[in-house]
Amino acid sequence: MRIRNRLAAVLLPGLVLLGVSQPASGQSAAAAGSWTGTWAASPQSGGASFNNQTLRQIVHTSISGTAARIDLSNAFGGAPLVIRDVHIAQRASGSSITAGTDRVATFGGQTSVTIPAGGSAVSDSIAFPVQALSDVAVSVYLPQATGASTYHQQGTQTNYIAAGDVSGNTTLSGTQTTGSYYFLANLDVQNSAAQGSVVTFGASITDGVASSSDDNRRWPNDLAVRLANSGRTVGVLNQGISGNRLLVDGAGQSALNRFNRDVVAQPGVRWVIFADDPINDLGSSNPRPTTDQLIAGMNQLIASAHQNGLKFLCSTLTPFQGAGYWTQQGETEREALNAFMRGAGSGCDGIIDQDAATHDPGNPTRYLPAYDSGDHLHPNEAGLQAIANAVDLNLFSAASVPVISLRSHANGKYVTSDAAGVNSIIASAAVIGVSEQFDEIDLGGGNIALRAHADGKYVCAENAGAAALIANRAVVGGWETFALIHNSDGSVTLRAGANGKYVTAENAGAAALIANRAAIGPWEEFDLVLG
Image 1 (cartoon, rainbow, N blue to C red):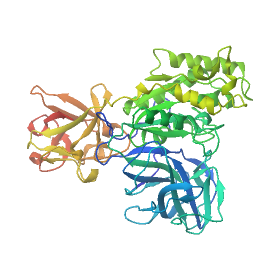
Image 2 (cartoon, one colour):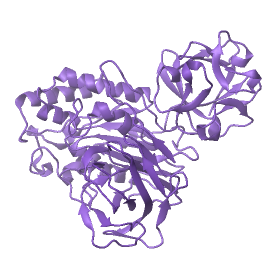
Image 3 (cartoon, rainbow, N blue to C red):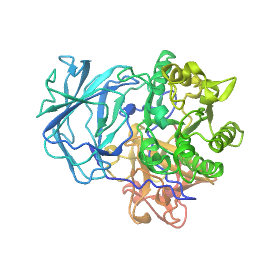
Image 4 (tube, rainbow, N blue to C red):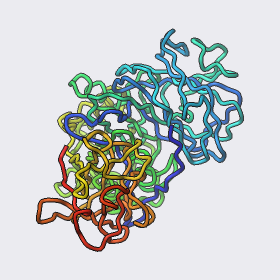
């Protein structure tokens, strides 16, 4: 189990925050024991309060897995949240689950968990096989008053609320229903064939507005079907929020302010598709942002994605003439922003041309009538399918992030992040396994960050280099930055950005690695072994 407190995620002008993404290498991004997201919903503030009630919530998966884990969020709670008796099962129909599939989730071996305000909790691994493109029921019991909940408003899914603790019941009776998700942020799986996950990051079009409830016909669902039918094992994580904007908070935190949590911290993430947020900036912000301001915001997201080893795929903005907030000025800026994304210097790693896929060729500022839901802002299910069909599946290729191991010249042993990243890093392993593998993230200028496969965290020169190296950071900063120095004998040395000192295998490798040397000798030399 992991309990996580809130991470600052505001992107200020000129500042890019970096976040954790899971190991990605070779044909599969899923190293043994690693996790890939199969479903997600972006947290928002201001949901209903619950007391002595069970929530049974239905999620529609994208990829399969041999084991599962559940991520519960109290990101916007004002007090600690107590959750008990969490279950996962295959959904049969309605609120009913398939008999014999029910499993109990634990958190650090316990059946209850208290999540601090602003935090989240990830369950222990659950021996629960997950099928691709299937419905899974997650039930949680809330034994005491929760206060205003962390939720996802536009669920487009019927979920169930029952009195008392009935999480383990096959069928719930006397239920209320809701179309939102509460406290449930992610369902992750273990799948050795997984290539990683793609986050679809946007607003109401991504969130599935104008698709029918319980149909799972949002365009990210349609994309998941296409990926599965092509033989690819790529998790699709829908992080759309209806009404969301790129630059300004309102319906959820802005794209800038939630990018770290909702994209770079997602399990197994390798790609992000940035979609319809700027339409709301153009239509509902007062004053309306300029094209240059929107491009600057996108550039911050692109830079953050690239510095975390992610591919940033840009979606052009769909037409919206006829919608209540359309103006000619907004249309002019939409066209300018689309031209920027299609241009060679945008920084986008690929284009999904939602505009070309949905507009009326004879009247390109409007939807093709067959794709218009009727409000002239949201496509209907045929239009959502057209958007999914516009995604080039060849964008989802094998990972290119180098996987390395380091063998110390001090003792000939491999550097290891032992005990799943809990212990300090030390050169003590005789062979290479998961704990001895690191993703080498190129930060530019000869600098790198190392992301441990043991726990998916970045290696840090703790306490500004005064303490031993440990893989415990979710974001990259100065303490997680190292200059990679190539020595004349073919070995490499790491110089910590935290203090400018060289990393050494202290005491001839008998002690943990630490950045405390002013000169390079054998203890500071490592063979770099590619995975």
